[in-house]
Image (cartoon, rainbow over all chains, first blue to last red; front, side):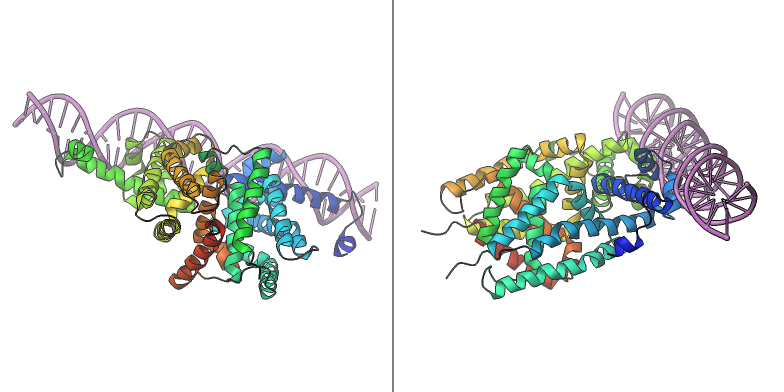
Length: 213
Length: 213
DNA sequence: GGGAATGTTTACCACTTGGTAAGTGAATCG
DNA sequence: CGATTCACTTACCAAGTGGTAAACATTCCC
């Protein structure tokens, strides 16, 4: 709704400006996520966009400020991708399954998004704090969800925070550690992806699901 | 044994040269692993070492060639850290447990080593190929080990390559994704590390151990 | 002991980096 | 329509980049 109110007449200057900023953020996210923040110069970015670096610096006063904007964008997109899965129908294992499928879809179609979060973690400092703050609402929702599932005995009882981290790194790892996969002789094809997802689901199932009784 | 034969008289020029190269590789591994290859300039490196960058370029003709040397060093250290675990006494779950403990020890004491491998994976190209080639013997040993354990029914049957990747990313993730841990409210202290290791072991146990029968 | 090989430094270079200043053409508005 | 704001470009700059050339000090070897 806010979007409707604030969105100016189509084709207006303000609208085109926002479209440009959007394009810049999008390309920056992809580049930072795949090559790393320091490995991408403003000139590189500008060249990809077909503009000059000063155009970028017009919208954000420094590369560091641009990074903050990209962080916010990445967190937003992550939440959009995953938050829905938490609200979906079903419960217990079937819901976990749908979350894993969704994560896999993101990892396959938007690897730069997950790579970017990882990159930010390494930069540390303010950047990490920012992404942490951005994701906090989502993390607390996920944790709450896990707690409830445990209370109702649908998954094994354990530290919900660690469960989240374990699930996150397991899936993210299996989906993105392409080089490691190559090292063990798995070329990342669509077919092998399906196989890996199936294996991973059974791995997680064994790990998470409470022994029924 | 080879070391004895090739090692020159103590304090000789050759020995000191090798010590210098060793120091450079060590500092480079730490810096590249924590800050990233592109984020560390030769001047930075030299400053940390108390020498000039030209001294570095004397031993390796370019920054890229230095990277190759650092990759070899990292792979060697990784193998030294982990390979022993595969030959240890015990079998089945107890051995897995000892491997996990070892990985945790490395992740805690030498995070830059694992961070470096991850960094290299992202750089891609020749660098990735090199680390893959360096680690191949170790990977094939680990895979063989898993296969045997499965044959003898001590762990669940599944794709051994994926099992390796899953175990690797789960452990590496839980041990190194500090920012994610912070996001879920776990400050990385020694105490929390112990807790996390215990949780992880139970997670892995449920996932890997074959239902007895 | 003297010349040669070796490891390191000083001096330098072309190029790239993030960032500034001033200018320009088009959309906007009174 | 004319002034102004806006989005962007051209022209720079100082600092830092990886890398080269040559001078220099030390160790080695005959």
